[in-house]
Image 1: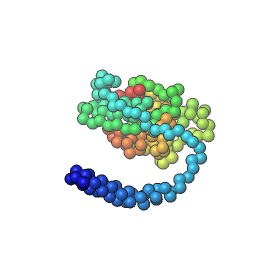
Image 2 (image 1 turned 135 degrees about the horizontal axis):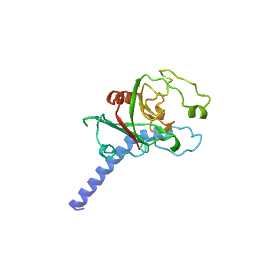
Image 3 (image 1 turned 45 degrees about the horizontal axis):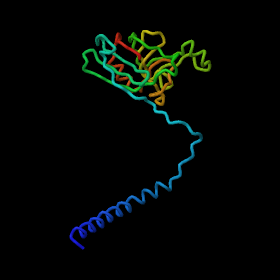
Image 4 (image 1 turned 90 degrees about the horizontal axis):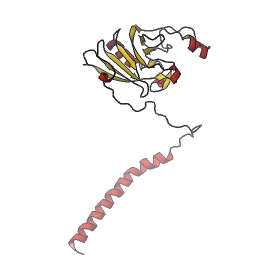
Length: 200
């Protein structure tokens, strides 16, 4: 046996020993994993992501200026972008979006009112679709608008919080754009009455 063969055999032995040792270390974890019985799903359902692919937009592609700040809500990617008036603050938030195209309004609007602790009442069309819904809900944990609401110049449309965090990243609203309560509180502090808004 020449020097090369001895070296090659030594390497095989060392690599084999390390691999066996690693396999031995991993084996208890593998055995434990195999012993876990997961419940059978009740029905097969396709896995759907909450948030679709997001591409950052440039404010210059949608607004002439940043006077009063700007909000761009992308109903396809379910994300909202905010730029401050001087451009020093930029924020991105995941959102809920309208359930269907007929509930979705696109285009330019602006913030006309800000309410900390909003109350809620269903619109006439919402009440028609859901007659069992209450006529009024005051501020608090049962309020569908969450902790803060930014009222838009379009009647019945708002950017608001939600107490049902499962809605974020989904088509789940009756026309409004929803954010996590912590994030609407942040946006509420940044945005002003008069802030430009565009839904795409």
